[in-house]
Amino acid sequence: MNVTLDQPRRAAALPTPSLQHALWREYPDLVLRPTAAAPCSIASDTARLVSLMVGRRKVRQGEPLYRERDPFQCLYAVQSGSFKSTLALATGCEQVSNFHMACELLGLDGVAEGCHASSATALEDSEISTLSYTHLSELCAMTADLQACVMRLVSREIVRCNRQVLLLGSLNSAQRLAAFLLNQSQRLSARGYSAVEFHLKMTRGEIGSYLGMTLETVSRTFTELQQQRLLAVERRHIVITSLDGLARV
Image 1 (cartoon, one colour):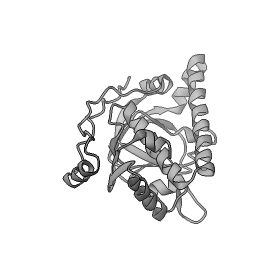
Image 2 (cartoon, rainbow, N blue to C red; image 1 turned 120 degrees about the vertical axis):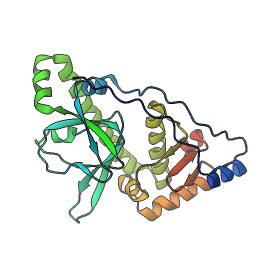
Image 3 (cartoon, one colour; image 1 turned 30 degrees about the vertical axis):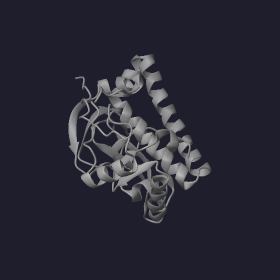
Image 4 (cartoon, rainbow, N blue to C red; image 1 turned 60 degrees about the vertical axis):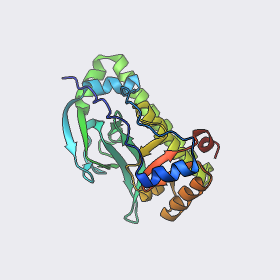
């Protein structure tokens, strides 16, 4: 049974009236209008694995899809909604290691040791589909190009981890937050949503955990980027007023 990814909904609604008025006062030439959603664009390797997945399951906001050290059995595709991956620290706290949105895969961390190396939790009401890893292994044994597809996906995850190390080790707080927001912009744009206006699903505390910043530093950096006229922010609602400027931070 093949599962087709849902088409994304239309772009997020316009900002609340108070944010609209503030934007138009500060940026009189800024035009805010909904953007028609385009079909979700995902890499061919990811699309190939998603085409093998079956069933759909709802995961409520705050509900774990799997926990760290759970036996590894399946790969998952996010059909709608979003998730965070977290690692348990010796202090009892958790470290956010990644955020996942529609059209992305979850569960590859379990391949190495047969159990999940992280936990995955829904950031909002979400839906996933599944692919048994046993079944995938059988298919890979019969099809060399499918095996190569899986290896490329694992390799890309290693590249992502290396980039995260670079992000944390070489950038200041403003550069980290700017890079994070640009990444969100690019991923949402690839799914047919607005590249400059979106609603963050994660809290500022979760953003800070991912970027290696305290909650206070995240809030202060959001304020700094607003003062530089690069962003307009109302709680989790973000309007990027200058993509080029944000990239130059």
